[in-house]
Image 1 (cartoon, rainbow, N blue to C red):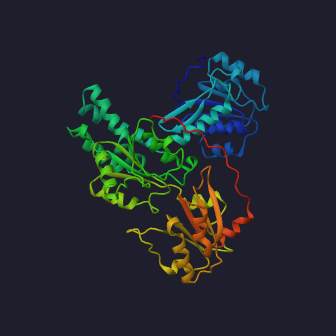
Image 2: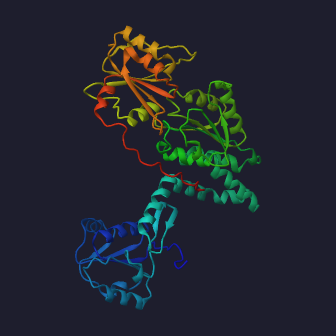
Length: 473
């Protein structure tokens, strides 16, 4: 390890930047965040730098470098843009012992600036000793995606309570366990969700509670999207990797469960033929039991939890019992499936509205208003409609929808073995039966399905991104 990583306190200290081009402007943006007193020396400067100087954020002198510019400086940053001779500048700086960073030239620098993930006051620095700056950028992008945007707010929140926690819990191991419970539990979840008032109230209760070990957990209702793991949201992935218990459905895409933390308990409550069907009341109690045991519970559903996912029922049950619940939306199956085969659900030439319906009502019966089926400029997407496809088609035709209306059946949407069948409304039931559609599948009814025939299919698919390792916060 040639370069030793450290963080320099530059607040209120003089930092000199030589150069006024784009490279210098990017470094100036970073330095301004530190509260340093900036002197920029450049015969010519970008508009951004000139405007910053006009606002009083820095001092700009439009002339060549003078060795006296380094008097009292804590850092020198040089952009080798050809506007000034480099050697005299570096010689003067080395004579004073000032740390030198020549942008993108580590061989002439005494310090290098790492790639930075900024969640102030949490900072992550990534370096390659100048060997692979593009790789550093890629790593920074991945870490940016994994760390919550409000992680800095969580650090500041913890800082406000450090004194109170130390006064209340005098034993070191006890403090460590307490802080772990805070960062792993619903208090941190509330801060990350923006509810600092609720988090503060919960924190005060926890500090003053002698039964700290009896902490209550939390539940996240997460939409896993239509099947492709690449369509998981960043927040969903983070919470899946933090979970203690994952309660999941059967209709999840291949690879979705591979994104869950490896040592999390997994409970399958999905419905499958020939298997005991777990009732909704039982699922509600499973979630409640594990949350009461202090666990971070993830309820993982295909699509979106609030679109035919019974998420509302689970939310109401948990809230009645005082359990903190967070909702993480997912790409609902209708949107993911339509996009995967280039069907625009709305198109001003063919459809001005779209309706999502389910083929199974509360009691399993087909309960659809005829008016929803009749409108010709309305795209209809039917969830869980494979077994009742013929009945839905008959009702739509009886309600006034043309028998020749184009339809599409999308099976295992967004997954490698996705299948798309096309036909007409009159033949929908026969199409599903003859092609042995087993699901999960969506039915799409409307002129937009014919419009999509003009587009190439299948669309090019990128290779799935590797699942990142879990990062501890």
